[in-house]
Length: 113
Length: 112
Image (tube, rainbow over the protein chains, first blue to last red):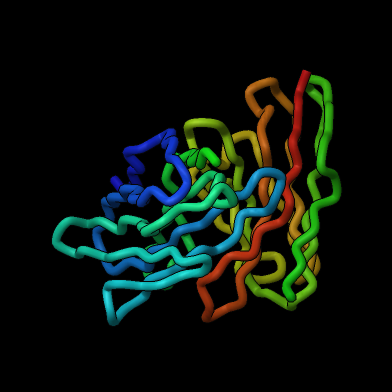
């Protein structure tokens, strides 16, 4: 079955700590991968995406993610978080060209000032 | 800047009522989507549409229908609302050939 797993449901960090959020997927075919973020009271917005090429992709606000095909993973990282990174983060997979997106259950990140 | 708007931010309905949720995008996107977002479950696709009058079921279409009479507008219909349809409903759109979804602000629906 096609699925996306985000292992961390709630993460609490202090400012300047490093962040890594896990995302694993199960899909029988070529995929496009995404991380979306939802800041409190705001719309979901795209953080970064991977289609092909360099497996290390950089997104907005200093975030990056690495696609490891052999592990079916697309983990999100940031070297030093800020209070303003407090948000809910969603990993998503799209079967290439299908427009059917599968989202993970989300990770709520709280950054303490 | 793409704008996706949803008709209501908050809606309260009674069990058995027919409910219409409207979504409008202003960037001539071909593809539009309806999701519901529930705590601990993430976003789940209800229906999507890749063209006017065209629709495809997502993962949880039961109890819902959709209508796309115009390219910019995609409506989600709850024929007979039930309490288990209390949720946040998100609309999104994508330009054909692209992959970035643009989301609306959401409609928080409560069914009493």
